[in-house]
Length: 262
Picture (cartoon, rainbow, N blue to C red):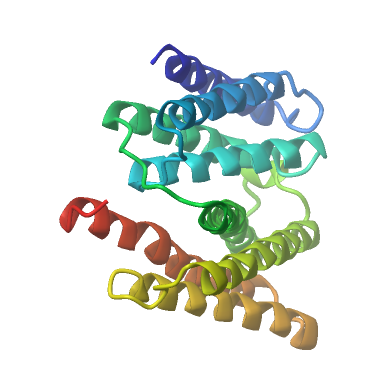
């Protein structure tokens, strides 16, 4: 629990310092918050590494999956910030990572099911895909808000902490491209290594994941062929992410807590 408290404290301290830097318009210049965030990520990872060592296998149940996804989101956010892009995401992502790390520690670690390396590869691809595309969903929300505000000629102070619209849009589609590749790897490893992919307890998860993959694929094709952007891109990205959220966590919640088969 000490490691969890350290991770939570570091995440929240990083969020506070980042918020102050953004308020002073220093988000890309003053990065004193970044080492705190990186340390928070290290301690967050240690929570799962310790549980993995004790159980002899990775825990992929509901709260563990939430926490691991938030850990991936925090790592991606810090990577973006190191490159001087979208530091503002940390104000949203780091508190979420702190919350989910705390929930995982308080809920208790479930006894993990035995998984061979093929299933572990599938599970890690899925978590990385979700974390990457969750960041893309946040970028889509910011893109939609920015475009909506500019269309109404409302120049709020918070707009100054965001990159120009075209740069934000480029970052969104690059993030979607990486997440789409990871989601493709998830579906391929599932088809190869999960023998009962369309069994009763996995069918809805598989169908929703495929729907998400199709929507993201159509969006990327539309961007390349027809130049889709702005509200259209944001709406499709959020719709695809909704399918993915239901596939990953909606079905996992039902399976672990309602059917109690986790």
